Image (cartoon, rainbow, N blue to C red; front, top):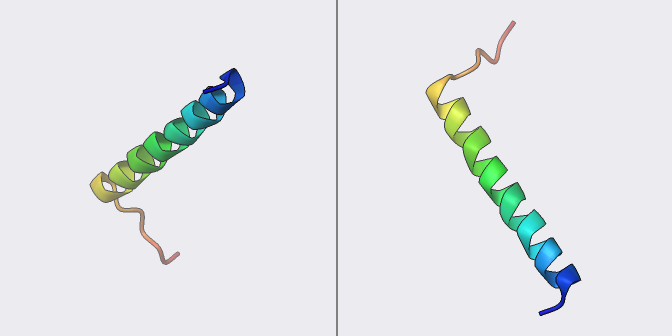
Length: 35
């Protein structure tokens, strides 16, 4: 596994973690959709 591959895997994992955090935050604090 090259350094570039590891960096890409880390970035992908980080993005997935961030998506999970965002989804959890939205579940906890539902934003009103209508204005």
